[in-house]
Structures are given as C-alpha cells and as structure tokens.
Image (cartoon, rainbow, N blue to C red; front, side, top):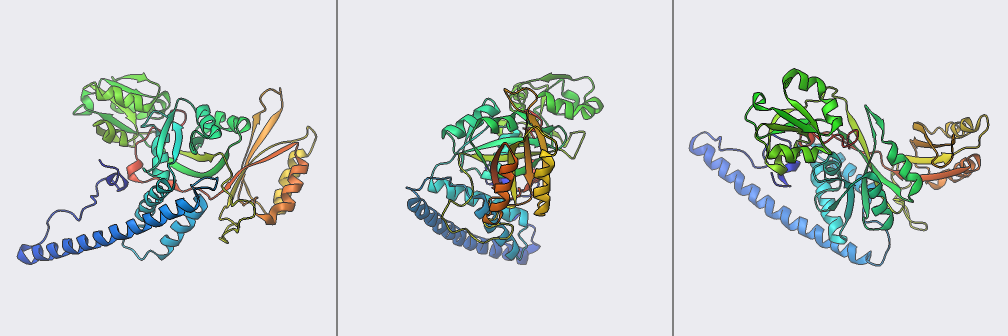
Amino acid sequence: MDDAKAHWPQGRDRQDGPDTGNGADGSQRLAAIRKEIDTVDQELLRLFNRRAELSVEVGRIKATEPGIIFKPMREREVLDGLAAKNPGPLPEEHLRAIWREIFSSSRALQRPQNVAYLGPEGTFSYFAGVEYLGHAASFHPCGDIAQIFEEVCSGQCELGVVPLENSLQGTVGVSFDLFLKYEVFIQAELFSRISHCLLSNAPTLAAVRTVYSHPQPLAQCGGWLRAHLPGAALIPVESTAAAAQRAANQPDAAAIGHGKLADMLGLGVLARRIEDEPGNWTRFVIIGPKSAQVPQGAEPRPTPGGCNGADKTSLLFTLPDKAGSLSTVLDLLAGHEINMRKLESRPLRGQCWKYVFFADVESDLEDPRHAALLERLRNACTSFRILGSYPTGPQLDRMSLSGDDASDEQGI
C-alpha cells in the first residue's frame, strides 16, 4: 500500500468506487461526477503548490533563525480551526490526517527534519512517529532510548519519538531517567492504541507452526495464542519488526506486530486485535533540544488554554529532606487551581535513597501569568526544571494503526 493510501481506513478506497450506475443514465452520471472530481483535483493541486511556495518562503525568512521548525501549538490551532469550520461530509479524523501530512511536507520544504526513534523500521515507535509527524520527515532508527536522547541533544536529529508510559505496564523508567541526564525538552505528546495483528504468509491459522515476536506482545496475546494456536512454538526476538522479517521467510511461521508491517513486507494478516486486554495505550512524547514555547521577546499568539496554546506542563523537581516539603508544592499548585495529572518519584542516580519527582499539570506554567507561582515553586524545591509546556496530545486510534508493535518495551 502506498503512503497516501495508508492514511485511509482499511476497507475503504480513496477512489470513488466501482461502477454502480443503473444503465446508460447511471453511467453518464458517473462519468460526469468523475470529470468533476478531476477538476477538483486539479484545483487542489494548484492550491497545494501555492501553499508549498508559501512554506518555502517561510523557510527563507527563517533560514538565519535558530530553533525548531516543528510548531505543535500552531499546528493544533490550525487543525482545531479547520475542524470547527468543517461542514462535512469529510470526517474530522480524515481532515486531521490529511493536514498532518500537509504540515509534514511544509516542514520538510522549510528545512529537512531528522527524527530519532526506537528502531528498527516497523516498530510501534516508528509508526507512531510517522502517524503524528508525517511521511516527509526523515526517520532515523536508534538501538535504544538513550541513543534517541543523545542524538537530539547533540543536534544530529532535530526531534525524537520517546515512549513515556503505557496504560497497562506503567512508566518506561529509562525515559524518565534520561531527562535527568540530557538537556532536552518535550515539544508535544501523542497517545497510540496498542493493538496486535498476526502476520503470516501461511494460508490459514492451522498452517502456522511458529510465532515470533518481542516478549511483551507474546505475553499480551497469551490468551489468544493458547486458544487459537495451542501447538505453535512461541519464539521471542528483539523486536516485532525483526519477528515480521523472520515470518516473511518461513511459510509456516507468523509474527505478532503492527498491521502495517504486512504492507511493508508483503505479509498477510491472519487475525487482528488479538491482544487480551483491549484498553492498551502508549503515551509518546516528541523531544527537541529547545523549548517549544515562543522565544523570549516574541509576541505570543493569544489562544485558548494559555498564552501560547499550551495546556499541559511536565516538571522535574527534587525536595528538601524534611516533613511537608512535597505538600508545600502540592498546596502551591492547588492554591492556583492547577490540577496535577501525574506524580511519580524515581531514584536519583548516584545518591542512595534520594528521589526525583516527575509531574504533569494541566496548565501552561510558562505563561507569564504564573511567574510568581514558578518563583515560589523553585524556592520550595532543591532543584526545579520545566521539561516542556505543550498541547494535550491526540489519541491515534484509526484502523490504519490497528495491530502494532506495541512494545519493544511496553508498547514502544
């Protein structure tokens, strides 16, 4: 399946469908509609190229300016505005998918964009990154999560796709720890549903003798495998992408992985949504070497939810070892009617029995209106760092994402 088609739900074609007209009148009407579609396509082509020219011009103006091309707050503002004005029948889900690809192309025209992710190609991290950042970005596979942070921090990659937590298995601890080591910032977040497919060249389930996958998907699909493939050998491998490659070369083997791996490797899909727990989601964050906020001195765009469109802030802080130190922070946030969505402590590396706290709050704490609050928070903590203020992420749960590589570590 080509990239453009991959953005449409399975079972629905981009074309207007087979000839279904009744007799000569129906055929003539269908021909007229197709002619009108051709005319609309030509107009869209003209407008897309005009938009591309404007993007190139923006790139020229920004050529001497440092910073990240990806502007999630501005992109969300555009998407929300289009969705609010959309009269249909184009579904909002399709509208947003189309414009994410338009944004991706615009960013690439302004400046090539390298994106680090947990590889190899075909992992759930890869597909989540492509779904959110679009196909025009250049995706660079990394061997582990630490390498993603290293490449973003060094400037080798402008952005990185990092798994942060899973709705069933909890947090990806290494990701939290690496925020302590590297000076990178959260630009955006997204939520991807973890749903597995059984991929194979075997003609039927009965012909499958071996199933490959990463240990996590094998465990997450254990009940289904026992019920449908009780005699098959279950072989753990390093990633679901590697599992699919093995299955592609063995006529009696199958792999558990992302449904789009079937398109990449020419495999069939014997079964979909074979996970035992349907409510499995992974939260990813997009990291960059600089804050996503408007630079100091620039005029912010007034948008709902914050001065720059952000409505969520992630924090790292450590506290004095005394009674009430955590409650002081919580009371400060509560006093400003700021809701805390997440609070987790992690061991502070190199200091036995010392801990660092990671928190998500529902507010743009980098809004100048919170300057006094930030000062009081810093005074209450022994260290205090804003990891980023950003828009609440979308939930990517389209059929084109069903089946997944939901875990080269918990759904990575």
